Length: 169
Image (cartoon, rainbow, N blue to C red):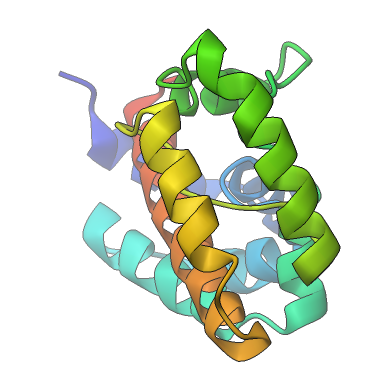
C-alpha cells in the first residue's frame, strides 16, 4: 500500500514552484496550484483534498477555462506521455469505440452552446453514460452549467490528488 503520508510530507516540503508544478497535474489552473500550494502544510491528505475542492469551486471563470484547456474532448484520446495525459486516458477508458462518433457530435454541439470543452468526471462511466449526461447538460442555462463544470472539475481534481498521493503516474 502506498505511503500517502510520505507523499503528503514531500508535497509539504517542496518549494512553492515545485509544489505548484505537482498540483498543476491535478488541476491545470495556475490560480488553483498557487492557492493550494500557499495553504501548505497540510496535516492530512483529507485536508489537502478538502482544501483543493474548495479552491476549485471558488476559481474565477477564466481560471476554470484555463483548467479546461488541459482536458481533451470526451471520446478523444489524450496525447503525450505526461502524467496528466496518462490519467486522462485511464479516466476515459470506459468510452466504447462505437460511442466515439456520437460523442464527437455531442462535443461540437456543447462547445457551440457553451464555448468550452464538455467536462465530466469520466472515471467509471461508459461512453453511453457520458453521452446521456452531455445531452442533459445541453439543456442547462449558463449559470447552471458553470456550476456543473466546477463540480466535475472538483471531482476530477479529487481523484487526481488521490493518485498523486499514492504515487500513481
